[in-house]
Image (cartoon, rainbow, N blue to C red):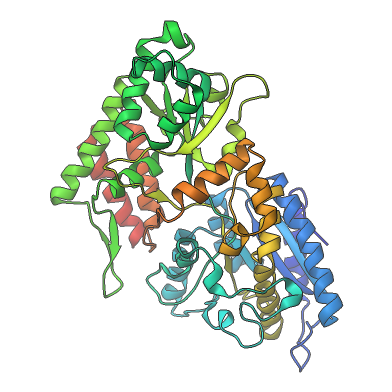
Amino acid sequence: MKANKKSALLMLGVLTLGMGAVSCSQADGTKPSSGAIKVVFWHTFGDKVESALERYAEKFEKLVKDNENLDVDVELAYQGGYSDMVKKVTLGWQSNASPTIAVAYPDHVAEYLHMEDQEGKPGKYVVDMTSLISDSAIGFGKERYLGDTEDEDDFIPAFYNEGTQFVRQGYYVLPYMKSSEIMLYNLDKVNAAHKIYKNDPNLSTEQTKQFMNSISWDELLELAAVALENKAQISQAIDYPIFYDSDANLFISKMYQEGIPYCSIGSQGKASLDFETGEARTRAEALVTSFKQAHTDHLLTTKGTEGEYASTAFKDESCLICIGSSGGAGYSFPAAGSFTGAVAKVPASNNNPLYVSQGPSLALLNRPELVKADNDLAVKYGWKFLKYITSTQVNIALCVSGSEGYVPVRASCYATEEYGEFLEEGELYAQTAEVLNNDINGHYLTTPTFKGSATLREQFGAVVGSVLKGNIGVTAAFDSAFNEVKKGMV
């Protein structure tokens, strides 16, 4: 059966009771001790993504039945947001109600690996997929009935390599659908501002689109200033022309674009906060000060400052430019007929385009509450399901018809006729995908993951919001944030 959001908690209770009744597995290890092989999949997806995934879970179950004569039950359970997931997974291991597959940022998995180290039991919770990837029978490219025709080299390198960015060697997360930040803008009003900025009343919307495709961060701020100074000609509704959804991504991406050291993992596996002192600290504080000045000048605001995402402000035209995840871009698309939206890559600083890789990855997990043979089967068929939903045709289908602006994770997806047709449609989702495929691909950045790396991201996102609101000075905000990060690293 498939669990929906309303039944998720009930399902977990049933699982907990059911696991207490498990006796011993069959000796040959090919079937569970009772019933179907259960692959419990905890996710964070909205209804559209969940419905698409549910359809393919059913297809997967049928393929296994037809080809292996085994009953597999992929049970989907919504767990809330990303921070909710971390808490529920760790509590699940303690309460004997845990998943086989979980949506996971690499930062989450770093926390799970640390739990294992604290208990002195590496491998207790997180499956190192290295041996599965290369397995002669079930590794990548070995099971054609699952559409599994390509090996691991087919994955987009920046997406795939996230699975190795840990203190411990191994492969711990597999990319599922990916996203990055994009810039969505009001083409008509930005065109009006562009004409004033360039002192050319004849500039077409196509010329404005070309300009926005190559604009720098400094030029974007200059354009925002022109829009603000000429509200009477452009729109009296303008409040802050630029609205940035993620304070943390604003800080991290600009750190990398400006070449300011952020964090690293040394040869001994020890994490380092590379901008805590010295020149890097001075430059990082200056960066946040520049954000503060842009906010004071009413050019830029953020979610951390406003307490809400940019979608509402963009659709009511109080901002002209919203910067946020392509994975949630649909929430900001204007209603039909209200105004024309356009998509471009986020302007970079220092002529150094680098963008945070985002979007759901998946961890394959052990369920300590199961007897070993049952857990091994759950892991095996959980792995097969991961291969299936990241196979070329299925991954295309999930990203095109089942996502909110995510892109596929395999190079082969982009060479298919189906994906080409999707891009040619020209809708805003397709425009978003084109920007990620053509303008951002090859310029992704991933940050090192370790115990406390999620806290580092959260704390310095909060620094930006607090400083922009005027709640605290930059240096004091940095001192407080570093103190909290160090606590999180213990």
